[in-house]
Image 1 (cartoon, protein in one colour):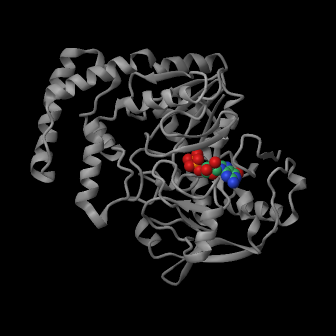
Image 2: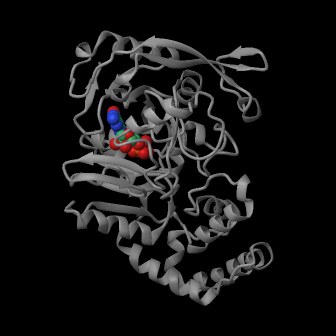
Image 3: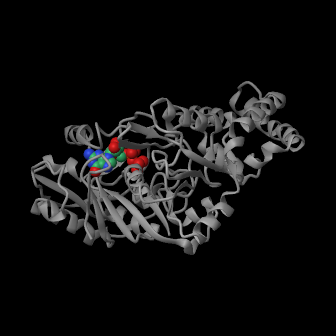
Length: 425
Ligand code: GDP
């Protein structure tokens, strides 16, 4: 059975924790999009980890962790991330990398940085991991596929061709040092040796695994609202964050994805720029940010303070729908225990009219939140294992959200650890 674990919002919903937890019952965990630009925080018996490129299944010996063809593969970063786990006592995970994955090049990081500097105040808030230049090159057909590392003649010729294009921009747009095709070729030869032990025809591997009835998890990065097509364009990421893309980014049939578990957070948080209707500011925000997540709402990759706000039912209902959600994991609920009343955004007011539909970006920028308030439960719910044992107001909050988002909440996460989970049905 193939199950996708994806986010309904702006990312940081707690997908890492849910994936790590579900990985226990799985055979294979695959990253199908994105790169090392976002992080998953996982707390388990080995300690606390922020994974950026590896799937969140790497802590189990019985699982195979796969980097699918849809990922932006930063090879030195991957090797370093594997080593950092081993250094902290995690047994070396079993890892495969698709021979069709494309390689995030050192110049992608440079171009990302140069472009952010050029845009200055108008930048997209990129993490400068090279993701946008990487995907641009992939679709402009000047990307390097892992398989190409193993053909020296082709590689040499391609290095020349790509440097020619890149150097025009470096010279005339950014006024930066030029790339040398010979140096680039040498670097890629190093990459080839690093990645060789992991390379695999992943699509074929998965085809067989599905036939054998293996349990497979597709792990998404970020969330619905960062999708380049269905999110808050242009403040989005450069690869699709939707479960549907899991089929493409892993190389399996779309109808094999039987379960789409969408992770939804009990309040809102976002990093980077872009419309955020239910955002809060000042002391109210500082308090939520400080109590939020595990040790505060700060980006796992960048350490940037996250923007925070109340639960947004409009954005989340849309986020769940566009994912094709079959069930919801509702996370970080324990954090809200300090509030007397909990505001929830149930509509957007745009030009004097209230809507429950999530609009396109220009309209979204004008939206004001329509809030309702639910009574808080004023206690710590960590450690509770059964749904019935949750305080009544807490259950009412969950059931209110469930009705609003029109998708069944089957898991409630009440702490950052593997065991902090309440299964509902
Ligand atoms: P991801 O990118 O979706 O995996 O999310 P992140 O890992 O970036 O952010 C989620 C944060 O919330 C991390 O710090 C997790 O340890 C933490 N977390 C996940 N679930 C819970 C929960 O139920 N309660 C609390 N307090 N923290 C949680």
